[in-house]
Length: 322
Ligand code: A2P
Image (tube, rainbow, N blue to C red):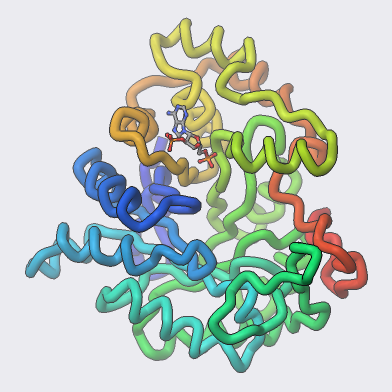
């Protein structure tokens, strides 16, 4: 099983990356040090996570004065939904570039196919009732062209997209092929149809929430009443983990790798950080793969569902899924 995706020009993107969402600065800096020591070289960030500076500090300490070490890393960040307008792309890229403080960024992604209202200094603008202020006028192709233009400066090597659906991916690809598609993928939401389209177009796919982001799932349950089991405790996962002498998380990650995608598990716990990258020395059998693949719930398994923002159904790109 290849440990890397090879991108145009020969850059290698490791198929296990380190997720950084919802980690505070201090905790993240320590976790990134642990991750580097454990062998992670792919780091996934976003302007909207508001922790690029902490990630950058930890990476720069590791790089030291050795430019060869910078080349070992693959650093990803994303245009925030609050900056999802063609004319705002350069300024939001500059902010990420400055905070990360690296000589270049490996990959810059459009985070979402919709925008939040642009409120300078506030990446998460909210209505009085606490809901997000959504902008209903996103120019998807205009933003994509603005991202592509960023490559000319040499400050970013690859650009790609996240959270788009099949039709949007094809429309973006008709302008220029995205270097990557990052979407929610895990056992309950396996995204086989969208992955097939990406494969047809030759676009590498990265799975976010690969372990099912339990905290996010619980928050959605409270809002919708939909039940999400803990993927790490599913009987089939536990049984297969025991058969291999591995942990449930390792089984979930291995299932994704053997399905052909990359994954960016997030952990701030040293033992779990190590565990999540130690997935290259065992193999799930065909029947185990089949058993796990049968647990897919399709759209009912989705936990990162943007359809809950008030008024978003009027957005021209809605429903962002198939
Ligand atoms: P922690 O940071 O305490 O390890 P996802 O990547 O799908 O969003 O999942 C992240 C969540 O899963 C975090 O709450 C993280 O907690 C937890 N987690 C990460 N790795 C493991 C693991 N190997 N076993 C159990 N839980 C894990």
